[in-house]
Image (cartoon, rainbow, N blue to C red):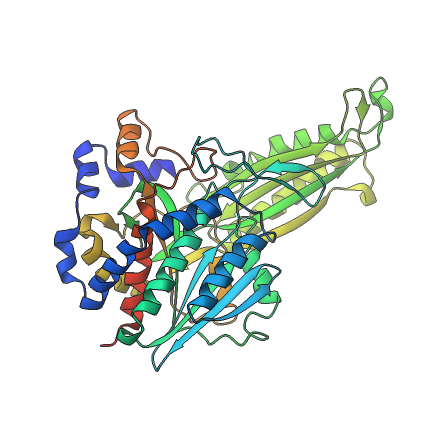
Amino acid sequence: MTKFLFQLLGGSTLVISTMVSATQDTQQNLPAVSVKALSIIDDQTEWLTKTYKDIHEHPELGFMETRTSAIVANELKSLGFEVTIGVAKTGVLAVLKNGAGPTVMYRADMDALAIQEETGLPYASKVRSRLPDGTETPVAHMCGHDAHVTWMLGMARTMVALKNEWSGTIVLIAQPAEEPVSGAKAMLADGLWSKYKLPKPDYFFAVHTTPVPVGMVLNAPGPRMAGTDQLDVLFKGHAGHSSAPHLTKNPINMAANAITQYQTIVGNVVSPQEPAALSVGAINAGATNNAIPSSANVKMNIRWFKPEVRDGMLESIHAMSDGVAQMQGMEKNELPEISIRSSTPPLINDKALSERLNGPLKALLGDKKVVNDFPAFMASEDVHNLTGEYKDVPFTFMFVGIANPLTFAAARLKGHPVPYLPHSPNYVVDLKALPMGVKISTVSMLELLNKK
């Protein structure tokens, strides 16, 4: 992701200063209701900051977002939304009907990551949480989901304040467990459309933080993010004493051999003209120095854009895993078990909707700050799964800059494409991005619901 951001943003400080210049002169092209919205949002800045810091300081992992979902539900109820809680354990649905007109759906994800925050901020997370396997881990919002929730609540407040100036229905979804790309499908399985009877949306959009300067938006049509599968490969072995390895069958050796072979898949199985990635994120095996364990679990993920690329990668993983086990004499009933923990297809933006929203966003931010032509990310999302069977709903997913412009410029001068990456322990959402993200979401919502 960093390489294409560097290419996208250009190499000079002149380009940077152009991107972060004032936008007031462009806002004369906004509809009057959007201009009014900007003033309302500016007045929310203190509340937005307080809300964001609170969520940031109290992060929760996927399907554990009880505190965060309560904040969302209570705020939206107070604004007059019809609110449903407990969808897929912690998800929240909220509907606001305001006369005849289109239905627009918007999602914010709530979960944090099992990462130790190192930002040094006074409101940095000190939270630790226990995982389902009993292990304890630090938890932090190092991908900006705390900003996503804050932006959604700020946008909801603004739209309610402007109810006399738009018409239609707003559907808000606070989604759990985006990080393991399983939350959206869990909401579908819990009856998102069948049990909870949400109105079918005419439009659906969502936003995500990205480490480019505050006041910049990336929104382009077509494939934007890769599909992914999160895999566990469980290698079985015969345990024993490390002094007699010849009497054991070491699953760690199998895992190590397989991992080496996995690295050839992208180069030798996938065409060099096709984007793909394979990464091993964890190996869980053993507990002591002088004993060979009975199993080793390899946690990995693959990323792809074409189903045939995915199929080829999965077939190779199966063949290579079985092969290394067979080389160590494992029987057919002892071959590795491969589990797909979660998966999501590539995210594809609707061309007409993407282009439509870029119009008012350029009026808000300036032409050069709305980028509509950039390479797709190899990162993945599950937001688009929320439409379920409604595959015809136009959808677009936008990336909103959250980096302090001076921090960004300093990183560039040092030769770094961005100051930090999502999922790093130093990921920082600049506080000025809070009202800006609300403005971007609100101006987009008003474009789709504004009375003509």
